[in-house]
Picture 1: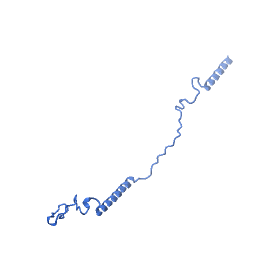
Picture 2: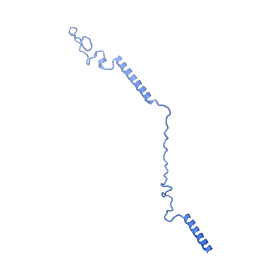
Picture 3: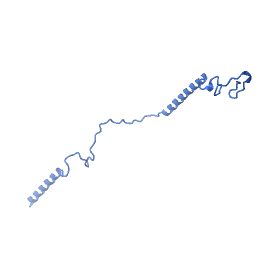
Picture 4: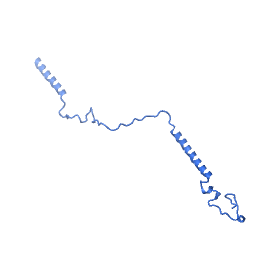
Length: 123
């Protein structure tokens, strides 16, 4: 009886070892399909790498510098306008024959001249 139990135990153990070594018949032999170990096939990306964002250290004074640039540009424009005014090129009101009038005033004979409220001159 002992050799029979011994033989049955040997056959059972070899069957179990063989069953663990072979994959089941319903699994495909191709390893490309997703499974629990690799859920999705890895896709290799060969494009350019994204640049890493770097944080600037310290305080930036961009807004302050832009403000000073605007102030300087306004100062230059103001100087140009004043220069034109001094030369009499700004508007017609500034030119000498106009005396602040929209049109040059009519020059009447000396006896008929009137006092002008706009420029304070008789013409």
